[in-house]
Amino acid sequence: MTVTRPLTGEPLPLDLLDTTWMEDGARRDMFDTPGALQDWLADRDFPTDAPEAETRTHLTEAREAIRAVLEHRDDGEPRLNAVLAQGMRRLQLVDGKPQTLDVVDDPAALPGWTCAVALLDLLERKPDRIRKCANPNCILWYLDTTRNGSRRWHSMETCGNRAKAKRFQDRHA
Ligand SMILES: [Zn+2]
Image (tube, rainbow, N blue to C red; front, side, top):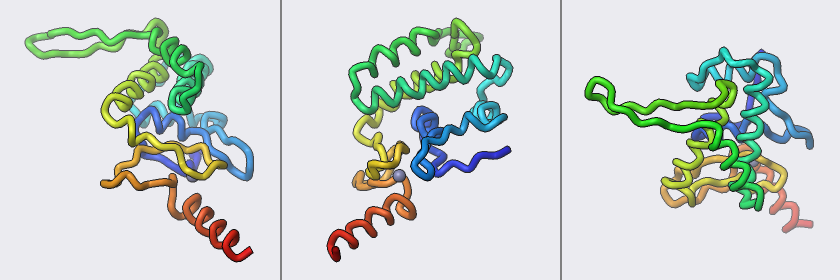
């Protein structure tokens, strides 16, 4: 079964966050749909042979650690560092070519660990462009790639329009 998410195509750590969203006042989780986790992994070239339940546990922890960091919560850094501690990136020269080899303690931890590593990269390159949708009832995150950094909504059609309608109502109330 395919899951239609409201926002896709963001950089890996934000894409992981966007596997949960609000729908009719309740939090939806893409990974609740049978097979969706394996599809998500395969689409991102992760191996899919690790046990699904363990992979999901690791991935869910990485997701909430990333969220805690981006929301500047006190538990963010320790949680993210705990995820990062599950693996390491080894640098090698093989047949004259530089190579990196990702080594994790448990294969089920690889996707979550990779997302955490990708967050560090994003924080280094574009920390001021990582945004949460300005709709307080929306939990989606995106990288603002507009030239002047003016994007406020995950989608102009949904959250953006809702805000516009609300401003109109407030003004005419
Ligand atoms: Zn939104």
